[in-house]
Length: 639
Image (cartoon, rainbow, N blue to C red; front, side):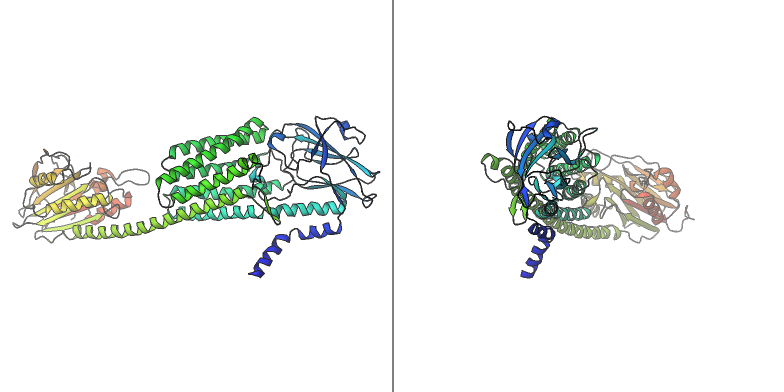
């Protein structure tokens, strides 16, 4: 364990070690902390002879406030006295990250510039820089330094651009030997990277959480909250990562399309977090969704202010967006607490902690003049309480969602087992009733659209040698339809001696009030040994006789009206009678075209298995049932 800790410490300080060694060897550096400042723009203010005694004295603004960005010019001046050890040596000025376009003058001579003035003031992102002073510029122990700076109209200290800390470590300007200043600049750049290691570890954790959420979504596509959490986690990592690369590139100015896209991606990730809460909190879902739209509009206003230098737009985005997010998070926390679902209270508590930490760091601590906990130094690193609690919230939420996922998996397995049992029972109910009947050849095929279905058929060999056939279709699919099928088949058990019309009337009374607002179509036929067939129909597709549809009077489907009656029609059997369900006619291909009655008629010369297979291959959308009855010793269309 000690060895691992030692390796970790070495890994943390290794980037800054070479620069630190140079600092120890070259300590002659003056930190320029006190300056005089004046708004406006006059080239004479760069002169070492200019009298700035009437200017305001300030500490160097290492961190610019939001109000400091006015879209105007400001000059800073200071005078430093060189110690004997630095007189006559090659000197340089070391500059910390400073917003917008600026240039440095030493003894009235321009020694360095960041950004450009024309066609409009523009610069890359802030960075630590070293500017050598030309030989012969400094001739006296006193050195006069002036900085001309243009204050952009909007701030650019945005999270997605500075998460890595690369090339950005705030410090006052420094004057000293060129080698020492160069070493310190390298040190500051490395220190910026090391300082933000906890921040980047939090971002890496968000990336891991996003990947896990994406895996959960791939396994359960109906749970959109997994996808939203994945989007939030991945964008929270990727947008700062890309933003940090953008800030390190000298050729990318801040107000260009690259940074705008990074800004938008980060803002979209923040909005996805609100939509994610809406997916979790059904009680206030509509309010949260409306809030996410408003948040997106505020983000667009912020992007507009960032690109077009509109301070009013960015003020609206910064101030109102923060208030909105706090309000929506607390509303979601309250809704989750009221729902009391497994894990909802834990997510609500984590949300409250996040907003409490945010409120403390952004507002309360400032009002109480206390540390805001945004940049707590711990050795060589800096810890931001907000990023830590935000990461903890994401992982608490992820754990809750994973536990819910596991519960869903257990329920799904149990449901699949129940459905498999139901299908076996239904197969036994249907397959076991196709009896070998003297004088008739029977073939039946049943293909449910789901595990269990709503089609049914029953064949009964009667005492007088007749054959009773009942084919039907319950509206709907799935387990509810299958349960109603079982009830219908049970009702047929002791009433098979009735005529077809009377049997349908009996079934109509038996199922009345049990269909849940649906209905049942059915067709009953009694085949006599002498070739006579008596048929009654309750809204079902008429059977086919030797490939031609029978002309029958169709009554109301079962379960609609107690007064329904069913007319019996007698025909003389030729060769083959084919019963089908509407799943055959309504089979639909990829283009949306139905199989239709015309094509079904052409299939009637085939066996039941061939008809069902043709419908299934065309595109099954409903349960498919085909039953054929052929009188033994006769020739029909099959020959």
